[in-house]
Image 1 (tube, rainbow, N blue to C red):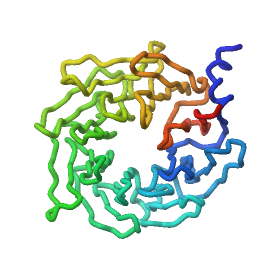
Image 2 (cartoon, helix red, strand yellow):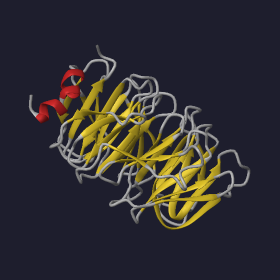
Image 3 (cartoon, rainbow, N blue to C red):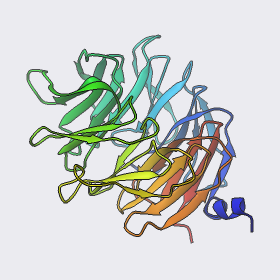
Image 4 (cartoon, one colour):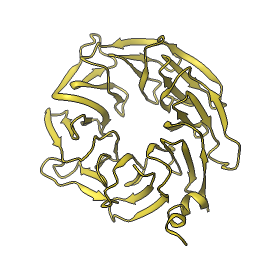
Length: 346
């Protein structure tokens, strides 16, 4: 068996891979378990059925321009944003509904949702909040620069927006919309909030991470990356933060007083190929990672055991996602290759 065949064993035995013809910018599973799709740079979305890999994938021409982001909607279905200024909902049956149209030249670049019905949508320097029925709740901002990332805490009570010189933390139910500003010089992009809501971490332009412990405003500086970190993911219980930007999966410990004063754990690296995407399993301390050469693998954090998912050679991995149950995994690449795996399949 060749090395490529070995690396593709999981994809061949438990899933399917298809060429979609354009950069896969994002991938998402709906919270209800039926919705699933790949968002592409040509504005299309390809809908698949996780339970039936052999079924035909449905292509929808969704945006008049590029797709930029796709996430699970608050309760069911998917939300898609594009550079045409539209926020579009896809129902579990694949029907498209326009939730908001911000107008051309207003990119819908970052979206976050919460099971309570809350939706947060970054457009330029503002974050627009909607409820589950599509009604606009309020507009947060302007921020100091274009919002680089948006996140909602696990309780659905706070919105975090990264931007130039830090992060703004907003309370959704506040009578006066005045954020708590977490300051640190530089440009902040990717953002992640720990499951307990006590830590916020961003990826920065200068190949480093910066974090804040919200209980006491303690700064956390995590540096040493050879490339920009564009992907962050906390494990289910928040013990580890997985990050891209190095030739391994870099895992920072958020326990025992860490991450400050603690060395990170590195898994699945050493060949000088940069990790581009990470996604932690929704239940277990397992991380899946995609690399610049197209390699996709899974790693168990405690043991360091690595299992290849897909072989290199299909372009840089640009999108990764688990379904809520942690039984299905999907990935996409910059060349338009898309993979979908059923890891519960026997």
